[in-house]
Length: 276
Image (tube, rainbow, N blue to C red):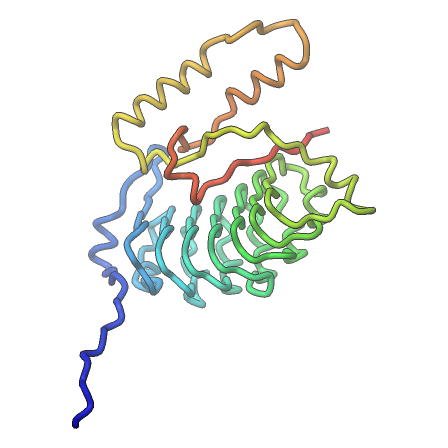
């Protein structure tokens, strides 16, 4: 009796992105930047041809299956905005520190460990928003203390037992999300944790307007204009409580809309740090 020969199942190959395809996908944003969006395309290998697009300012490779970034990612010197959330990254190349003009970096929902974060992240001194949520981090490179421009930091859904000390040192940091970490509130941590104030829980999630249909974008903009323009209840003199409430209601995020449940998987709900 001969052995049965079952046909071998071919492993699914990821989407191949060519330079021609990438060029066609570039769009101009409202603020005049060139954005390349290759999100949710089943890409498994970072398309090295993208490094030839020296005129691209923003790159969205989120929701793919990328496991590794090229060692020369730092050659992408024109990048100001990089979204890699929801991939399979386990580490970040040291050359990322060459992207000194970058202001936004989203690495959330990957498989990053603390050993996979290079000290060169501290070279990104123009960075305003850094999202490291939904990974396997328990510490951060101490060099991050040099990120003086950092305003938003996402550390949610990680393995932090203690809040990194530099969080209380960064002078421009006003939004920190440390939800769902096994934080210790023992001696020495209490004072740091008291400096973090949580916003009330809301069933609203942030999503980039490019993920919405035209009608939804219009509806969200109308709602936001009402919040911004309408004077809900007593402005002027009154108690400080009203002022705080009003500030929270009109807080906006450039390019982000609410509500949209799709964003629940990969966007953040920021916590607010008291500013003395």
